[in-house]
Amino acid sequence: MQRLVERGLVAVNGAAARKSTTVAPGDRVSVTLAETEHAAGAAGFELPVLYEDEYLAAIDKPAGLAVHGAPGDAGPSVAGWWLVRLGDSAREFDAERPGIVHRLDKDTSGIMLLAKTPAAQAALSRAFEERRVKKTYVAVVDGVPAQPRAVIEAPIDRDPRDRTRMAVTARGRPARTEYAVVASDGRRSVLEVRPETGRTHQIRVHLAAIGTPVSHDAVYGTGAGRGRQLLHALMLRVPHPAGGVLRAGAPAAADIIEAIRAIGGEAVASGYAAVAPPTIERGEAS
Image (tube, rainbow, N blue to C red):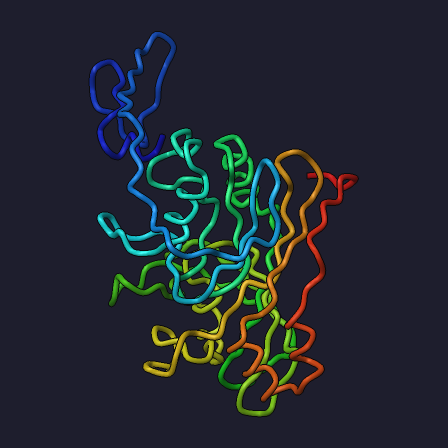
């Protein structure tokens, strides 16, 4: 609905509506709906499916794959793969975000949820917006945080000097990230990170702000030309659209395991190389 307003396809009493428009009893609201058309999804590759039922699927997104391309970009993406997998039922979805519930940066690997029906998409999106989803990431960072466990609470917005970046700024939206140091060799550290809000690039911005940027991060760190940022979405705990709570995770990717092994040894690396099978706990409140 917000995108329809942005495109001028919603009118109140014959005048184009804005997001700030208010309505009163007796006002006439009209909406112009175009037929949903999806760009052809990219075929020829598969993604690991960690869990699937009639409402949703949890996949293991590899680093280097975009969630969805820019307008007119027909390159490989999670959205394109999902369109192919949905088949005819893709017509039920918004043309721009078919089944997309949340995003991971292109070079961040790990678990990601996809909805199979518009109702499930709405329920899952609402859970993310209301902060009822618990997310755990593993990050390899340059340096050692001053505190072994802490909460970073700093607002984030577009960098006023470079609109392609995000930054900690007083006029930003509230953002909160909890971290704990799992291992360190004095030069680099392994962190478990739990973002409580979902701002763009939040983990990368917050960890850079405390002086320990994600290793190989070409935007917020010093990793230009050294490979992708070593950040992985490890676990999700999310209210299931049918009730209960889904817990699912994706084993850390091979490059992150290699880096963890070099910092914390085999025992620490092994803990992230395997995760518990997905479960739905029906007794828990959603």
